[in-house]
Image (tube, rainbow, N blue to C red; front, side, top):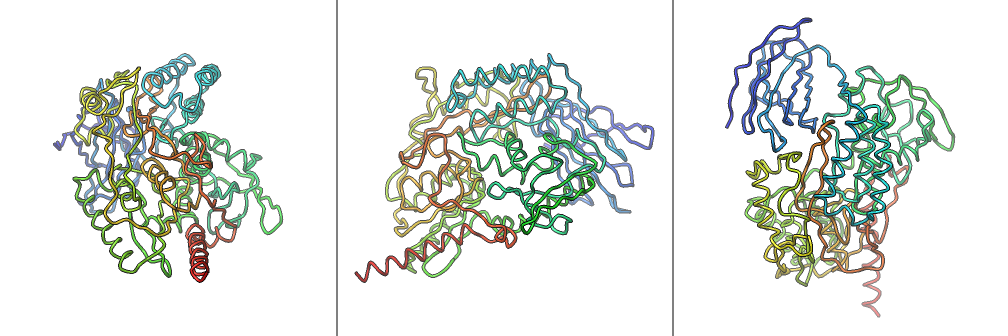
Length: 599
């Protein structure tokens, strides 16, 4: 239900308009008409809800924002009003702590925005660390899968000392981010209550280039820059490239011990926030780089955050990604006797009753029509960039690739079927979209899916994990599987099945999602009481239906048979080296088959 609230306003100094506190309930939408007709900021602050905001011009949405994660969140939108146009801001609650549902909201218009400067004591940091540990020990079934109790105890002993000595929220965030990653789950999550840039300077002190980790080398990723595109960065302000990669990796999480995602992703997703948490902002950047066999050094002034955002959004390496990710799924001819099925996500349908699932099923049937009619002998399954989604979708794909029945998992379990520490539990958008508004709804769901307790574990009900039969039509030719470091969750689950039970030749990089097991199915999020930092994890430990393979060790993602490396020139050209390798192997197979058929 949408309600329009009448918002009492009062004029502040410096021509700033502000709003007294207004209550916002879940499901309601607050509407606000900006009063200023000059370029400026609209700042939305909540007391006990994570809010999102959208700005409309003449009824059409022009900007939507949900930067902040925490319950005491701040959203900042900069807008430049056009003369004579009518603007409206809409604000709604995305999530809230279970115990406190209504939220107090304030809206402010201002020419500038202050830096968030939340002060905490050493005692408060230590209290939050202990709450963090208690949450994980009571709710995280993946806690001791890859680490022993002794290792966890040792890590927390050191962390408590570091928490006590933390000077600010960034210092403390580093402490618990390191612990989050140590556990070994790509579904783990720990984030600041507000976007890191809100705590940083508004001065022009941001990095004037962008970076890309290409097989352990940091390449310059900005066009039209004093540092040449694709130049290899040696150091920035005295910090070596290898150290930057290592320190950056602690903010990104993978199943088990897999490293490619952790080492690469920060330079794609974290340059707007994690880079400055770790390395700070600077008036000048001394950049040493190698280009055409020679080492060069240049000193460049920092740039504004908005200018850096534009650099990041237009970086050279996005060219290939934009081409790859244009469609959620597609089926294309790639050469003589070879087609490619590309699936970039399994989040386009909620389940088998979703019309999108039925549309996908028709698409797969049409794919089989083509493969059978044209007697195609080679099929590439391209899962690059696929971070997962609905289990029903990945299962549907595999029914066309396997001649044998399979299951989602050998077994799966949680540590509980009633939510612990509900006073810190966040009711997330995932729950709200499914009509779950409190712990009672979550508990009802858990009791239905995980009814059986055996030696302290609650196991997935047998009827929820049936044997899945192969389709009457399955592809019987040679498979090639393309994976990269982003492949996770349902996508890595599919990749493990393909590698385990088919003749697929796997090409790419080790996936972030595990081969043998992972934590998944249901994510819970909790909020720490003092800092408002949120932390979460998927509570169900899943032992996947995957065979033991000699090249797959516990704690690894799906290991490719052929690992892809890119040259500097291929980076410049944005060549699809994964597809190139698959087609090269396909040609070799064709030649081999011709030779053996003659014999």
